[in-house]
Length: 271
Length: 227
Image (cartoon, rainbow over all chains, first blue to last red; front, side):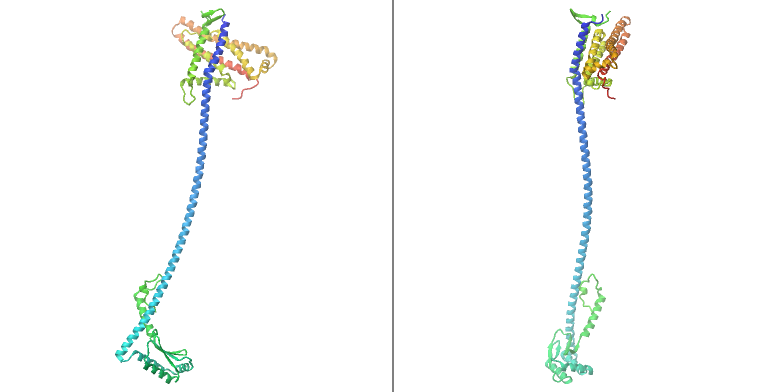
């Protein structure tokens, strides 16, 4: 008999015991280890995916921020450029205005200074002319300047043409104020008397005559009555002198330019 | 000449006896259980692991995959039974390289015991899966006329399992024993190598057939999902 039934039963039991043993010591631990590892790998993969997604998100955020920053920087730069240009224009305009104002001011000052100098020159010239004339007269003719002036005035009164004589006589007779004789220096009594005599004899006998001294008077002596005047003055000489001096200065110095000449060059009087 | 290791008796007390079949089975059980225990004592759940753990993982996952390919959707439920069938038969065949060893599967008692276990396990898994009524009804498919043929099929395939394994294993051992007496040197080695191959094939056939039977009993009304 090939089949021993006790052995069959024993082997069946043995097999079942082996099933239990292997389940206990082989399948469960191995499967547990595999599952554990797969869980761990899955967790690591999920973690890596999450990190990658987070990194991607971070990268996109960074790129967006970078682009925004670039745009903002460009806008700020353009704005700053525009502002700088505007500021430059404004400063240039201000500087130009200030320069214009300064130039105008300086030109005015120079002109004023030149005018003052002109005035001073004119006065000084008058004084010099009178001084020279006085000295020349005294040296050459033995006469004073005052005498010559009064003589000239008397000569003019006497040698007046008829029309002028009539007009002046009319003026003297209708005047309410006394006739006024103004001179650059005090007239001696003899000269005053001579002038009074001429007026009384040639125009109107009872006209009162008043004498004044005006040191700034350009003309040497003036007789005024009711708006009419007879005078001898050196204004013509002075104009001729000024013209001569001005032409001389023009030839020597540069012409007056818009930028403003140096004060020494413009100090000379203009004709 | 002995046809079965059952005939080698070490000890007997009435009905109870200790023969070579039982003794070698215990030896195999000891080696398998202690080996598994030693290897699985320190299992690593990290990415690096020992080569013995790798071997066992390949073995277990390979068996699991084979069961799934047969058509059992939850292979871990059947892994203990089918995997142990394969490992026991394969270990019994592999151990033939040890001189003086006789495979317990070369005993018709052992193969009958294994076939009886399959005979019991198939309806057990079937009933557990679809209930007693539905399982019994499957014997009358497609008509009640088929009931006797189904029952005969059940018994005959169990007998075929037992005899096929026994015949292959016994014949291998027998041929080696005969050849040893005729041509002592070369041919026994070749036949031993051939015996290893047939032993592995038989282990595969036995466990796969058991899996197919269980699959047939459990998926009568539940076709396996397309793979």
